[in-house]
Image (cartoon, rainbow, N blue to C red; front, side, top):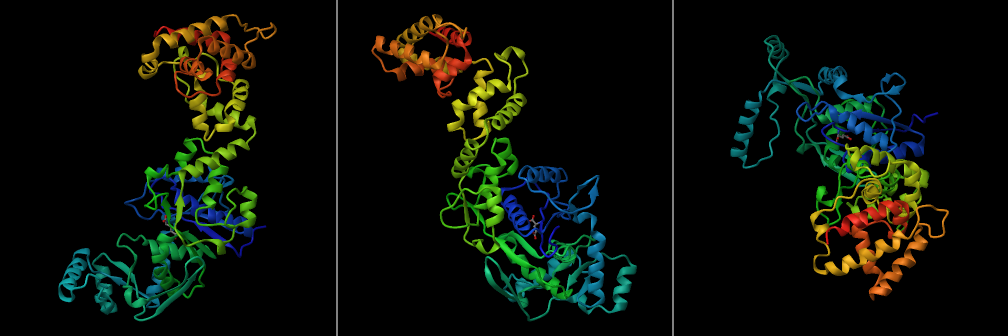
Length: 498
Ligand code: GLU
């Protein structure tokens, strides 16, 4: 049973992907709802027709679902809840606006944008100030004037009649007591001339109508709150509690942008992060349980999360820390689950031409590879890139072909010796010198000793030849999984460069 006394909402505007900051807002709302067994509502704020992008609604919902954030209400579309959409609630906002007009808490304004602009210019000139409150010209209209204007079909907006001198007070759970005098707030527009509500109006009406008890959102909305409170006041509605979440900055203290790492949840999914790691990291952006704990399972977060522990100090987004955290989650994930994730990704990015494939992508092989790389895996994508030469032909880039330009004869010598030694091995696991890492390593060490060089040098040459890259999974295990034939093929192919 849900506790109807706790109702929260996440209210994204569909203008783009789900930003890391919005995801944090969604997650904090969701955590609080879960902790309190309350209701979590998803509301799409799509009344800004200029910025609206319809296809981003699905993107946002997909990212939320990937993060494990589900909503508890909305129009039923075949057993699942669609989100609420403000664009479908126009009637509701207009009914409230009409009620406010009837109660003289709002009025129609027939001033055209040009006229308002003239007023603004005149005022700036006269008073040397660039802050202009609407001069309430239309508040003076008689009922007859209004009826005439309506009869002629003149466009109008609806403005809230803001009290002249009233302290607007509220206590934000993170930011503390906030007080603003209504003197600095003009009679702002609540319904535009196209009949659509402005942001502050639709948010307040929805929060009232949907009986939202806790408004948890980004601090960029702190400055909108007084206007919304005036709407609550005009409608004589009970106030929710407010918690504004601190700004998220990049690790250098600058505004968060792409140069600090990906900023959309979609990108993190594409980069092969685990949703559990992202959840954990999001929770740390503005909330802390104590000064030291950074790793929390979802159950722990639900149990420990509290609005009172939200910090107003800007949070720093540290991509390296997130990578580290993701690596930790990967190491705690069962190899079978990791294999599935890697498999899915490899299959999706498999080259079109069959000739590029040296070995079919299959789960059994991936499961053998995982122990080689698990300790250093940071994302699924990185892992796939690292291990793709197990499955695809290696194509040597120019820089790799010329890698040993200044030491050609030594590299050729190392390769030839290695080829000779490996040819003596058998692919057949039943004979005595099977192609196993524990047997390959001492043979290569012998080559190093014979040539009077370090095993590291031998490994470097063999790695470049085998992997076409400077980095590979641990070499001897890699050779074993690749098998004798393919290993030799690659060593021979590379030695043609000398
Ligand atoms: N639609 C607003 C946004 O995306 C959020 C409004 C709110 O949470 O009050 O920023």
